[in-house]
Every structure is written in C-alpha cells, then in structure tokens.
Image 1 (tube, helix red, strand yellow):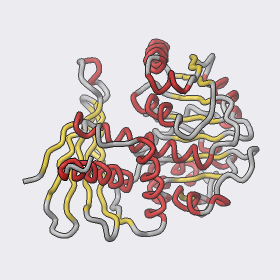
Image 2 (cartoon, rainbow, N blue to C red):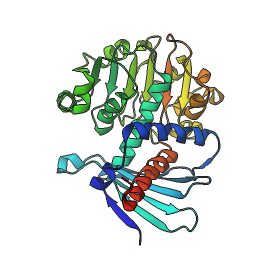
Image 3 (spheres, rainbow, N blue to C red):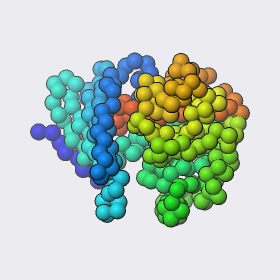
Length: 328
C-alpha cells in the first residue's frame, strides 16, 4: 500500500535553499533533454469559475515518476474555503507501483513555483536591486517575495494590487513574518502600478489577469521581470511588445511558453521570434546567454514545468525515506 503524507508532514521535509538548487538542476536536466514531460492537461470550469492543471513526467534514470494535480477555484474565499487544492502521486519507475500520495493542498506547487522565481532572479536580476516590485496579492505573490530573500540583497519593496484592502492585508501579513523581519525589507504599497514598474529593478507579476498589466513604456533599462501568472491559455500580464523590447527573454519551457505563456502573444503578433527565446536551463549552464549587462531588460516567462514537481516530490520522498530509516 502507498504511504500517505499530509501537509504538516510534507512541510517538515522541504528545505528552501536545497529546493532552489533542486529546481535549478531540474531546469538544466529539462533543457538537456533528460526529462519526459507531456503537454499540460487543463480542465476549465465556469460556474463556479475554476481551473485544474495536470502535469506529469519523469527524469531518465530516476527512481520515480510523478503525476501532479492542482486546482484553483476563485470564488472559494468568499465561502471561507482555500482557493487552491491538489496532490502529487509518486510512482516507482521500476515497477510502476504507487509509493507515495502527497496530500499537499497545493503547497508543493506553490513552493516549487516560488523557487523557480528565485532561480530566475538569481540568474537574471541586475547586480544591484534597489527596489523589488510585487504585482499581485495572492499566496504566490507572498511566497515569491519570501523566496527572493535567498538570492537578492535589497532593502525596499513595493506591492500593487487591484484591491487596496488586499494590498494592506498582504503587507501586514508579510511584515509579521520572521523571514521578512530578519531580512529587514521595507515593504510599502506602491503609489501606482506604473510607478512600481518605472521605479523597481526587479519585478515579479503573480496574477491571473487576462488583460496585460505591465506597459512596455514604463520599463526602464536594467529591469528584470519574472512573469508567473500566464500558466494557461488566455492569461497575459505583460504587453506583447515588451518582450520584443527586452534584450533577453527566458522561458522555463520554450514549447510551453509559446503555447500559453507571455511568449505566446508576443510570438503570435510578431514581436518576438521563437528562436530568440532562451530556456532557463540553458542560461544556468551558460550565463552568457542571459544577462550580460546591468543596462539590459530581461524577462523570465515561467509557466510551470512538470520537472519542478518531480524535483520537489523527490525531495519529499528522500526526506520521508530518511525518517523511516532513522537517519534524520
């Protein structure tokens, strides 16, 4: 029978610095052709509105293969329910046996997504980040900022969201967290979205918008943008011409991002050539493919690749096995 791990057990098995390294390694393996990742499965619901993403795959020669389901039902908070849920299934590559059921409630998806944002900032942000700009007020926006603590030295952050009440709640929540207090980060509400864009050298967008929020005219030289929200068809956070203006455009998966990421409308409308897109794993392997000057505009289009789910599931599996052996 497979072992079932619940969220409280899972959280004890994930180490943030190690996770960032594992996600880095996963991107390199993916771009090197060592990962089998079929196209993402999508389910869409209208009443009430919701999305389900199904991602799965394996790394050649590994012990396991992984299937992940994660959902977002946007009206849940009005009923006092969490907006997201999910699980990961960990199977043996040798026998096909289901070994672990990870009832993570979408936490592992959120963590591996935030870690990917940290990887992008580590390899693409300018040398001196004077201000971080966070666009969005949900769980991922919070986690992105916390994870940046591992890779960015910065003292100021602006937050923008459509709902000022949610912005205030998010800032109060973040200020109360030990990770932010130990960082010493000064977090404030942005005067406006346009000012956030023009005054921040590292911007993270983590929204579900279907109408672009970031206008290219406000992005200054030297800015890095990590766009997290376009993980499904029709979602778009950046104006398409901004990707044409950028000096470097990096995708977690070139194929996925052209299909349904920020790269999709930019390629479709002729602002960006598909062959100009570099994958994150390629940049990690060869930094000269990424930012080579603090005057460049760089963009990371992160749609979420199954190799991230594989890597974080493997971390949990290793930690659980170590506990079972009494090695931890």
